[in-house]
Length: 351
Ligand SMILES: *Cc1c(COP(=O)(O)O)cnc(C)c1O
Image (cartoon, rainbow, N blue to C red; front, side, top):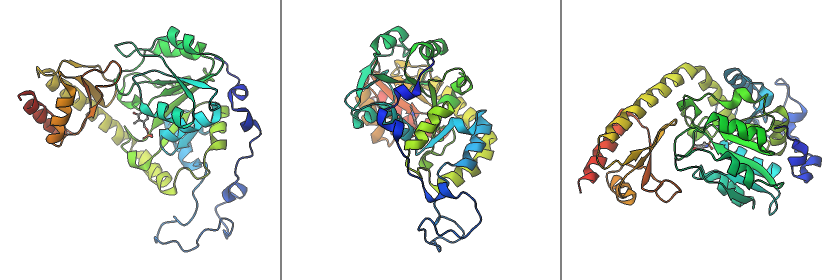
């Protein structure tokens, strides 16, 4: 749907004067830099950590743009996806007035961020097989509804949403539609990044925390129209991505081939884990997964969860979450880790 970003934006931001850093005013790399109150010596030799990093991460964005097939101006980089989520609330949701739509069971950070920002949450449940209910979602929206969060593949269920449902919502929801694709690399579904030009109200989130194996670096990506990306850039902290993170991810990007291999390996391990769990009578159901984890139903989730911890195997107990009665969320690990899980599981099933 064609959305008027200026009318969705919180009004006081229309006239915001963003912070301009020393590095905004002069962007050359040669010179005597006495503009940012940095220490000229530093405390780690052979690293330029004494200097502030590029606030717009230009080198990194131009490489990511190549890999993702979009323009650098369509990319926002955040200190994890969590920063992008928070900035969306701060840009578009007037506290105590506006609302957002969440689709439980889903990723917890949308709701936490909404609460921190004092923004009303309207929950529209997924179906028991974790699919969207587009008509109910549209019926829950009013003129104060600013953002709809769709997680696909969904955490904690693992499945991808039906493409036609997402498209229907992009065409009919009159706010911003966030599609969180943190797990897209493990899915057979294509990314919606390729549809950005078609849907000005679409924002796709991805992350370096999962398929790229760089969770500790904290680097999340948001892809949207250059206008929407410009809004996030205006309100972000100036140096939100450390120089260390920028350099390290830049150095990791040429390993894309290796990452593809690892994704393949994780998908094979997911199949193995599923096959082995299916053989166990204590396993009542394994939900279909497009992600790097399985949602597994057992007769007594608390007992299995505690028993696994006794065996030093840690999984996530999701049994109190809507439609997830009796369910544990199990991340796909290495083959050794899978074997350790299975052994512990069998032990618990016998007592
Ligand atoms: C893991 C995960 C992320 C990643 O968050 P980061 O802050 O980038 O590490 C985002 N969305 C969902 C649904 C996730 O499960």
